[in-house]
Amino acid sequence: MIVVQKHTQKAFLLVDRSLLRNLPRAGFAYDHGEIKKLEMTVKRKMQVLRMFSDLKDFDYEAPTMSYDKKTGEIKVEKGKGENPATKGVKKRVIGSMDDLERERKALFAEMGLDDEGKSKNPNEAVDKVADKIKKVQDKMMTEFDMDPTAFHVFSRDFMRVDVGLLIQRPPIFLKMAERDISFLKYKNDIMNEYYCNAKQFSAEFEEVSKLNEDILGDNPYNSKMNLDNYPTHKVPGSNPPVEYAAASKYFANVDPAIEDRRTIHYAGEDRTYMIVRNRYTQEWEFPTAKMNFGQTFMRAKQNLFNILAHDPSPQGSGTSWKVKYFGNSPIAATLREFSQAEKQDIMNKNLKGVRTYFF
Image (cartoon, rainbow, N blue to C red):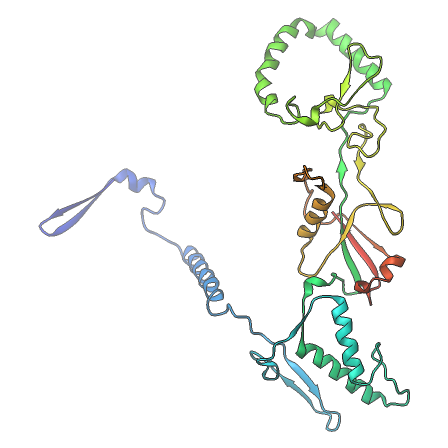
């Protein structure tokens, strides 16, 4: 406890000795390393404040280079702030590949070139054609501003980048052979006969199991109030009747002999994966989706799963599934060529194929 006492215009600090012994810095001694660490922390915070104040306007412009064919001189101009040639000029935004192709063809026609950027006059000099293409590129950079989110992501080798999901369901039941089951029964009989017969404690086991009823009651998958546990079919000829729920997430309500491959209970003894049919190639494959510039892998795979799990019915509440991602890195990558339908898509122009990263 610290007490301040005023006496004859002087202040005396009466500090409890136990407090001084407990404080790690009661001796007020700091080494050089701790002071340096504190200084670096302050510098980082000041740099963050500077980024949000002095450097909030990002006006960087890349250096430009020009080549004079007559003199052979190369001029490099460092970009500083806004380009005077484009200052005050409002650029037109290109929001799709169709807009890009239309504006590029218009500039080619203005320069006397065809739609592919080749000269209409086969006898025209190559230097003049190169100058025309250079002017088209300069106009595209100075007069237009492209929206990157409207274009597909592609790699350095001009492969379109897609994202895929390997949606798996782990085994529901423990798969055991008849030989293993017989061995466990035989082992249990030996234990009961020669070591300890657990049947004599069955009454106590029942009392102990009741201690967890409150915990089991909080499990939404086990609750009878959960509509997923509503019985949908019975086993014919069973006495007492055995009922199963087709949408249940609780193993006791799962039918082990179900044959519908579209249900989540199919092949309950094995690990299963979700596959979809490609509408163009009619082949079964893992679900995939395209990526646009500015989109991360995390956002792309979440959007893909939301599309797969969305309930389109009027009573649907959006996403009806829950998923857990195993890590942030892809576990596999594949390469493939474009299908016939993808080759006709203008968004895939000048691209060679598809590289898919699966999560």
